[in-house]
Amino acid sequence: MAKKSRAHCSLNKKRQSEGRRHRHQSSKQKENRFETADIYTLHSNQAHLETIYSAPRSHRPLEAKTPAQKRYITAIKNNCLTFGIGPAGTGKSYCAAALAAEALVAGRIERIILTRPAVEAGEQLGFLPGAVDEKFSVYIDVFRELLDERLGSGAVEYNLRHGRIVAAPLAFMRGKTFGKDTFVILDEAQNTSIGQMKMFLTRIGEGCKVVVNGDICQSDIKGANGLADAIDRVHGLADVRVHRFSRDDIVRSGLVRALIDRYEVSG
Image (cartoon, rainbow, N blue to C red; front, side, top):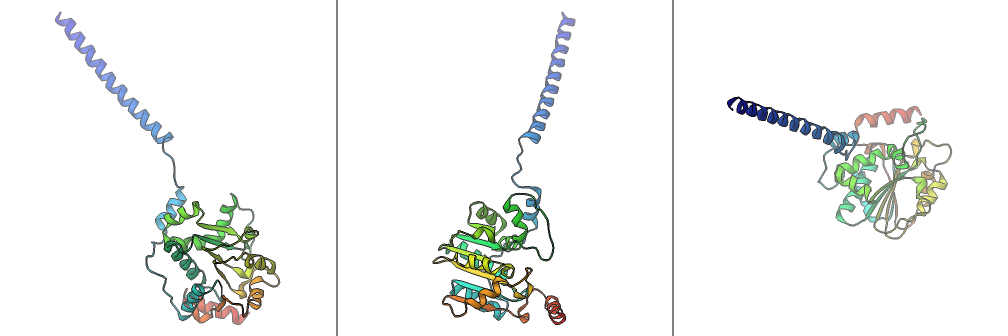
């Protein structure tokens, strides 16, 4: 009897050990299945890195760095249509994007529309993969960075998904009307044709805010450009302001100012 009891006890211990080993293996299999099947990537690795290294959100109201910027900001606030023309580095795009972001947060507008002509700066980029918004993103990245700084990357992503921030090529503006509570920014306007600029300006509806920025001296298209033509045509119109920046208004860096001086002298 003692031998049978010891054998029975040994058998029970062996079964318990096998049971523990089986449960451990089963647990590992479940963990492996969880790791491979039940984890969903909400953001791509690239988007994650962009979030990590994006500029921290600025909570301070926009402050002009130069008297010219102050006049430009005032012009945008007080007019339906404002043209900002002048060399690179004067803060044209930054001021316009910051004012649009402030207006969206404050509830004064419901939508920001960012657009520009899809023209390469002196080089052919070839075919770009992806949907239209992905193709166009390379042209509008500068505004994405500015809005990330003013609104936070999470808020920008949310507003893009829900159509409160829209980025589209200029060609896609045909047939649209910029209604009230809309802030529209046309950047790199020196690369528009006269026909494109006419099409864009005739989209303006009642109550919207429109800013057109560019540098007439840096056009990447052949022939007359729509920005220079429009400035001549809008002279004297009510609720329209043309603001001109000079080389002395460059805030990007002193080197940029010096380089522009050299290029314009040699040109």
